[in-house]
View (tube, one colour):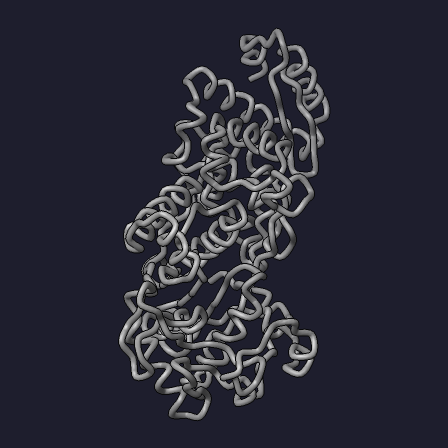
Length: 457
């Protein structure tokens, strides 16, 4: 079995991934708050951890991986939108979830095993709050329930912060009902015009952090393998999840491996509406960028580094994918290449895996290219409508791939006469070949003559 190594944010080391139960590998990823369209940055954890989901399914078996990604459908932003538009909250959240599914489907993301909505787990959240109060880790005050941060000595371990330093650096007004400035809300009261549920502390609604702890416990148990999300969630959201989950279920340890993807930039700058470089996924799709191209650009940078979306990268990705789709036309995908699997198994090195795809393309290994790309969610039939490879183009791509493979074999055998003949033949036929570290790349020059190319076989 392929060994997987992942960088665990909690230990700050790359570790061998050893699941609690190989027959049921469990992963939780924080999902969206459903009040508006998902922007390009929201798509990054979806694409990154969809690729991890695919890798886990490949290694452990599709029926042995449980992937949970939630929908936050109770939130003040949703309430504000309902108040502004006069629409029912459920209509807004249903519509937004539909948008989200359509946009993420366009990026080739598989649907998770479970997609729980927070409002379906209110009873579980209330029960967890009651447990935390009983265990002395939470307290009720003025219709609120708050977590007592000082009751959990490990608070701050994930983000590398101390409670005292956090308090010293805080510039927020502290609610008078809090025992400590860092205590956070598990439950809060609702006014008449706000959504609310009956509870031992009056009509109210959950705080943001408790929902993920309640849903992950219900669907994955007190201890599971991987918890992932954007680096912006590391503190306070994930820190608070750890505290309340470990205190509600002592000895469980909650999630064993924590993965965080870095943020996204646009043309080298932070994405911001004020800078005019803010895009939703739907914006880019409507501008003509294929979802597969967006996915390729996102995977071209390792998840632990900031990812820069640029028009030049998108153009290059489209050219590469169009060429690869021409190459694999009519090919039956084989099992993924070991080198591609190895790259992904090394802390999800998607950039390294893409480099291996370039190599497979340069060698003309059509079946292995198709099967390997699928492991990254690329070159799959349902995403290929934008490319529409015609028969003659596919034939030409196939022929060029065969000749490039023959040239590689001639070089390996030190048959330089044959290699030089193929090089000169490419030039004569109007095929510009460029050798790169990732493999041979080619384009058709004006005056391309397919008959001259066929004469090289």
